[in-house]
Image (cartoon, rainbow, N blue to C red; front, side, top):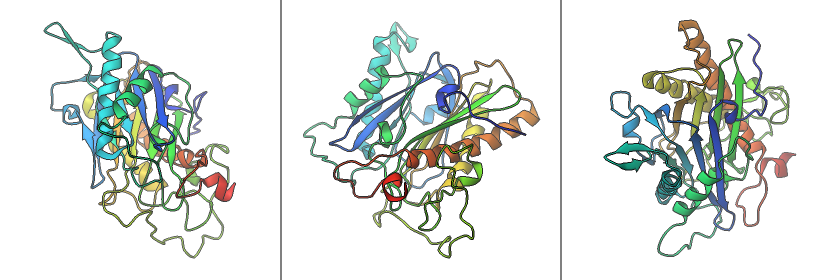
Length: 334
């Protein structure tokens, strides 16, 4: 089966989705908002040991809320959960949300990553800035957006290199599109040993993250375990896997489960006790295609490969900034 990316190679190749970013480079942190054009089915799967979330209980298949108005990825550790309030405020101003007894209530789940120890100025005073960054990100939502040192990936780090915001897409032969969006901030490494080669290389399409392939022979330190910090709960990769297929809430959760395999293909090690690794699964249904059993198998496989590509692209597109504690991939190897 020949696979190709969508025209943008971004999650917004999934029709009905927009993404907005806001960041503060002095803070070395930011927010990414994912806004569907209409309420969309969504679910979540957490496999990391140190998650930070808001409204994720509502996403379980057995609970009553079936569709959601936005998703948020944010830096700032627990302080970053304020970002969802800003996104919620922006959506309410636009008249978006459930009508509950005459009140407009947008439901906006969120996840955060730890970027406090990255060299940025976190002396923000009484209140953290994430609510305002969330508001700005929601209002900036568009089908076009940048990758690398932007949004929730602004202050992201990996083991020895800067992390970032990444995205990729895949169009299946049956017409279904899958897109991934990720703020890559793992404790582990996205490159093989101490080489410049990405763990995700087998899934690369063209030269979307350098076209380097795998090193040959594999370096002697391939299995070396490298962490960026020794502090506990000091990382997290958070992501969205989306499709234009028609899925139930339970099927969206299964899509999120499959996308976690992309973490394991792109990060060594992944899903540690100090990572809060989380994937939101979202289905806009805009293609009108209801996958049968075989198509569902393809969808799961592509969810993993597209996520792996997005993680590598997050690191590949990161850019240097004053006060960085680690170099960007391009500064180190490019």
